[in-house]
Image (spheres, rainbow, N blue to C red):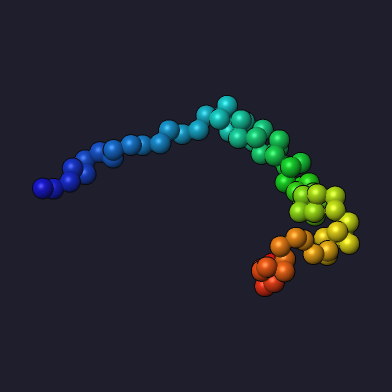
Length: 68
């Protein structure tokens, strides 16, 4: 059996000006989130715990001492 190569099965449509404007708007809307992510990351990983609380042992740490 031979493949029919006369026409492609699917051809993507060219984006319109409205499509491009929508994509630019979405990127601009996401920029504040991307800029704030490195600043909020430490807070998210600790959830407001102090350094002493983070360093303190948790219950069950003695059962699996090598687990991080």
